[in-house]
Structures are given as C-alpha cells and as structure tokens.
Length: 204
Image (cartoon, rainbow, N blue to C red):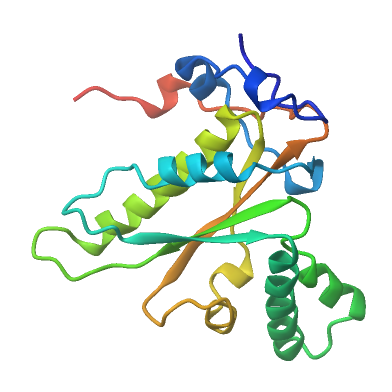
C-alpha cells in the first residue's frame, strides 16, 4: 500500500508502508518548501536518508560530496549568514527584502546542504565527480519521498555566493550542489508537465 505523501500529520512510524519502488519513481514530484510543515524526519529516518544519499555511483571511490544538516535554530543561523551577505551587497534593499533572505531555510523543518568538491584523479574527471554529487542529492530527495515526506531540491543566488559559502563553513575548493528541503506536505502537490519520450529519446 502506498503512503499518502501529503498527510498533514505523520502516522506512527511503525505503520508506514514503503511504496513500490517503480511507482514511487514514476510519480515522485517536488513539494514547495512553503507548502511544508513539521514534523520532519526522526533521527532514525534522517540517518536512513543520509545513508541512501551516500550510496550513489562514485567512480574511483573518491566520495566527492558531503552533507550539512540544518535543523532547528541552525536554519536561523544559516539565514543570518545569508541575510548579512545580501544586505552588504545590496545596500539599497528594503528591510522586507533582507527579512525574506533571512527566512530562506525556515519553511521546511529539515534542510540538507549537498557539498560538492573534486579531487585530482587521472581517470575521473571533475565533471564525473560533480555528477556523483548530483546523484547524491537526487537519492536524498527520493529517500525522503519514500518515507512519506515532501522534498524539494533548490538552489538560489546564495548557493553560488562565495561569501555565503564561507559563512556556512565550506572550504575554498567546495561548492554547493543545492539545498534539499524536507518536511510534511500541507496539501497534495500538483504535478507539472513532463516531456514526452518521443521528444527526448532517439535510437542509435
């Protein structure tokens, strides 16, 4: 039996049925963070999500990614970093605009930052290592969805701003592949148009 991915209240964990894998992959869709609420994943569920995030194709076993977990007040502290950089670089911004930036990570109860970096390797180009980080992000989205939560992989200006990255503790050679927002959906999420296979598939 498929779990309803939009219940406003989470069922008891022991009662959660894992959805069929193929059906899950066929029907998965993103949930906007502003349409999420608590609760978020339990500690055990978070460990499961992160474990699945680390189980991706990784040519050369280089592990070219790591995760930053933002929960509780950590989301606020990250928001302060974002708002401070925004205000400094946009001196004409209104107080409302700065406050919007401060709340960037506050909608979902859990946000996971996917940090991407590359290691010199004679057989594994940087592009492959970056793709591995992307695969990790997608695994996290899928795992959270399978557990009955809403998930959304987002970037924004601050994902690419060096001052913000430094403020969040990233090393100079690290980048952010994005933030995965995870929470309990407050309503059913509408699907969007998907490409027709006839438009994207050719045979060689």
